[in-house]
Amino acid sequence: MEADQDWCLSFRFDSTQVRLNNIGQTAAMIAGHAGQSPLFNEMSQHYIELAGDFDMLGDGEVLYVGAETTAGGESAIDYCESIITEEDEVFFSKPLSEITPGTYKWLRVSLAYQNYDILYKSSLLPGSGTAYGTVASFVGFRTYIQNYLINGTEYTPSAGTGGAGNHNQGYWAFQTNVFGTNYFTDGQAPAGATTVPNPFTSSPIPAGSCVVTGQFVNTAQSLAPLTITGSETEDIVITVSLSTNKSFEWIEVTADNLYQPEIGEVVVDMGLRGLIPIVND
Image (cartoon, rainbow, N blue to C red; front, side):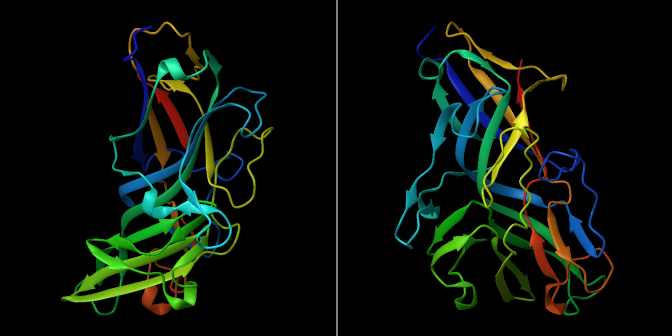
């Protein structure tokens, strides 16, 4: 095998991909809730693993674990050290010579930070009363956050969410601009509310984790385990297709399927709704 052959992964965000629940079953919207498919700007991940049918979490081929810190107390994802990438940009690569040859059925990726645009409604806006704002959401098991950027402006978690420091899965912030005035709010989704699809049900994912699991397919979308022989002459390129199908979810106050933060509509879920790892031919 040539030394320069790599394993490469990039994200794809797909609003038409099937919407799944935590155990990989098709999921409809909960009564009294609404959701929309956000327009993703960028994302980071914290953990990557290849697994076979009998590999519990951590027992497969662990390819990457991101930086963690105890600066906030308990060990947490170090947001300032996270690698944040856009769609179709390679977010991870590794020489194939450093990966154990074998046949792998599942890909596990722990998602950590998301940045995307959503449509919202406000009485302050003219016409339809709708405009786009940006959400930063932290869906990793726990994240140490001092500050972060949204559209070029630096923010620190508000005192009401605990301020700078460790934040459990589900911390989020929303930012928009109305007639030159900046609007910012942040909050914390309830514990256990973030959806983390795992169709590999014989290998459970710990509560509060965001290790999304998917079964390898080929470009024709047929199930096809990934085989690494150790004698590859070309790179192995994987597209990690993530379902954004109504992945931003809130509790409605006014039943109109439009997110309205100013009337107290509460965000409850920001988890991606499925992962399909596609082995490119």
